[in-house]
Image (cartoon, rainbow, N blue to C red; front, side):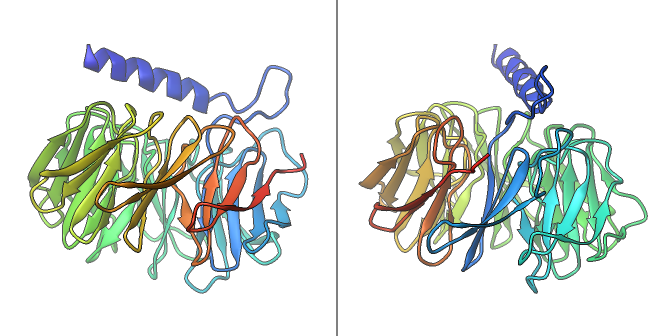
Length: 357
């Protein structure tokens, strides 16, 4: 029964992701916002545009493209290069774009070598850009959009999760049930590990251990050097969210609305909390607090001992992890208004943003 539920769920999600345009030819939102924060600017990818917002007051600085194109939409979280000169955007027209984060204008290149949509966020490193695509390939590019590897790394099924990196390896999880460790320089396989069911959330890597949740209602810890499974933990339902790891604790929620704190070394449960609504986005851990949202619009702040501190309710569903710029938390929601809310660390809303179009 569980396998059937996972199959049905995957078919439904796949159908949603493929419905970027309605029958009338008007662009409709078909996924949830991808959001990235720098100290001064918030970048939000949602539907026909990527928006740049002033982090202090929520005013719109620019939108890309200036006019919507019915053939393209954006949902993957944008990625800033280390020098701040490029903002990398994965789109639903199968193209990876580079734009100027100051002006929102094209910065000189795009990569059109993929065969499907960019759902997972690209990873930007000193060596280059690593972009997962739902065609089942991980593309490695330099900062001019040229391939770094002779061939893109291939998985059996689509990649919806963003990659992570450590010690010369790139790690990517896919719907083929596998976590793949890939040599960053050559693109060759180091190891794979089967986690039994599909993985859609970006793994976390800390102190040589890789953590990932699966549609099989499990959290796994893997040795990053060998792929050996160190421990597993059974959740109450599917895990869509990415894990967050801080001070030896793994924080992760499942779609039943149960939020878990697990010992990072043993997988032993420290505590759990029952939220109102399913948890699909990852958590953010800051200064003794852990923050996450649910599909009922509840945004929670818990202490790292599992005690509720405060919550804020937005109109809509929260499927994305919150981001922080050093002053405010930024929460993106769908099926409601506003699209983005800035919230201070005491739980007070500072500003909302709603696209004019």
